Image (tube, rainbow, N blue to C red; front, side, top):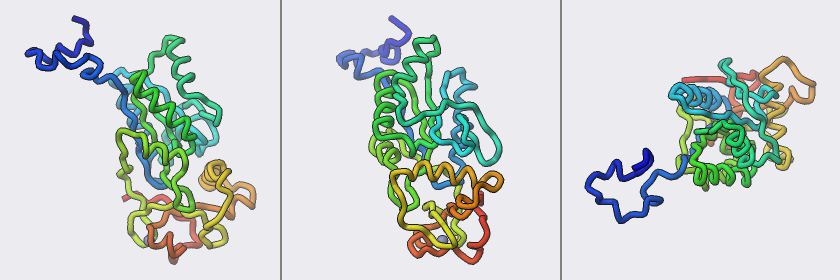
Length: 249
Ligand SMILES: [Zn+2]
């Protein structure tokens, strides 16, 4: 009997008629943790990585357009880890198989800013979970500034084994849970924009908003998390002139 023989856990042989492939936990998990901007997703991603690494599991951190502009996962509360930057052409299966070929047998992947993945890349993650038994933990924003699902987030909602709203609440100025990332320019909520480049725009603006002042044109566009009602109404609240963003409960 090998170490992996599922009959080890079936002393009565009650499952003997079930093909081994049906009984063994022969696939990994695909989980999508989602929430609005500033809700602590990157912090949670790094915490999960820490927990798994402590148990001796081998992981790889991936990111698409991190706010730092560098290939790493960085959180707004100041922690950061090196990560592999995924671009539009990256085949995530090849990436993982390449690591295995180099002797690095990955147990899990952490993917931050996963809303920017293409649907095809999300499908590659599902394939890795199913066929290579890699656990995949994705973190990202569900909807864009128009309140529409990002294509990558949509595919994750469709394929993930587990969907988990991130628990750290971001509040609208009114105190209600913030769920929508409003794109704001000159005190107005923007409803239209170039959806094709929305991913890049988000990353660029977030980066400039959280670091020292960028070019003047970037400084006029920002994001504000609103509840559904105030997103609908385009009401930025009495403190709209301020750039207050991060409110942890
Ligand atoms: Zn509100």
